[in-house]
Image (spheres, rainbow, N blue to C red):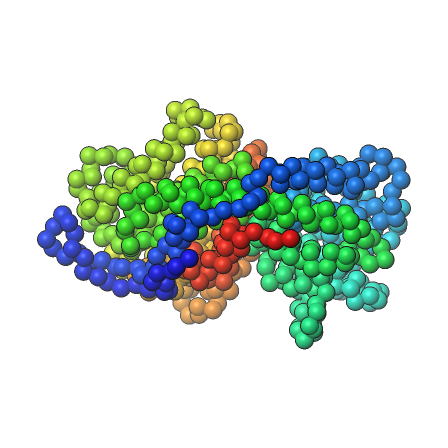
Length: 596
């Protein structure tokens, strides 16, 4: 696949002659690299995994796993428990969820977790087996994580049982096996990542576990052949949970799981899954990943044809990222039945990015006022007042809107909400034009709407076959605003310098430094990173225990959108600089199959 003109985003002023006037227009030009996904390449994607025989094999494996594994864990299996029946259940659920195949066993997983929850003790924790009275840190930490992620109430105060009177974790003094220590530390670290607001003991646990795991990783740098457990620890430490989106997690955990198919990934001498069962799980995970990827290939072909037929592809001033937007949603919402949602998000995202780059960079304030008015009113007669490039953009916006509205009306009827509720982007444009440095209060008022999360989430949501009454929409606002604020913070923490260079003074970093004279950029970054963590804690709680009734798919839509943003922006603005950021990730998840 060829890449043309790939370079980092930079900004300059250019004299551009508009077709409607003889006078040159002084514009800011953002030199974003162009689309890196060639039409012919995307159309050439092919996979053998669309054949019926692969789906048949998947169905066979699902039934065999239910019989070989779950029959011993539910029903009659409860009458004759193994000595480590609780640890065994947590372990099975953990690997199925991390491999991305848990959706095939929802009924069985519910029964397994109901069983374990009966023996959970918020004061003492939980042991390997229900007949074992000695609590165990590994089982308690793994159980805490699994139960909390699946909606069971568990208190983090349980970890006080593993601290001394000074609040220091003391389990290491009694643990003799290095592998057992590492396993317990890994489980504790992963449990600490599922933190709600003000759960300080989980913050303490994370600091303790990360310090110990960091030392273990450092001491193993010279090892030629690292254990499966150590590779898993390195992966978890390098990729925070908020960035471990489901498809990325499945891809990487398959690699870890297959490293030594005969190895015990639980606790040696306590519980070990047989090699035969592990091989069946691994085969199912690989087939499932590749079959889904075949579905994604077909959608990418549809998307690339849509893009190739647009006129806006000829406009070079904006970030052409239709594939990147598709990837952003597919990382979390990957199932076959969500195809329409993914394609809708990619199209709306492409449109929103076009509008964003017009408002933030390319358009002049004199052009933006009538352009914003035309968009809000959907007044086609106002097109004559616009320069040629804006006519093209307005036509594209109208066509995209109508395409999605028609599909939404088939599901929800004619009363589809209008798509643009305010003109927060125009506020940014006015600040840029006047070289105005807004206060933090002014910036915060505009920042949530200008993330475009409300628009980006509304349109795909309208393609979900779920009835949305006024109460449901109202109840989603808090969650939506929390996601939007989190996305704004993540974005500002990574690209504030680039935005300042092309004339934008409205970033959280710049506004905070203005309102707090003497603050260094490093201090401002530390503060925004602290806010990102606090926001994510609130998001996690809302996602798992939201007090209002919201359809599960809608919660996933919001939560996985945020996690995908955190993933794509984990090092740099991997969206704007996708040729250097997420191109390789897209190839691994959407293009290249996992080989047996």
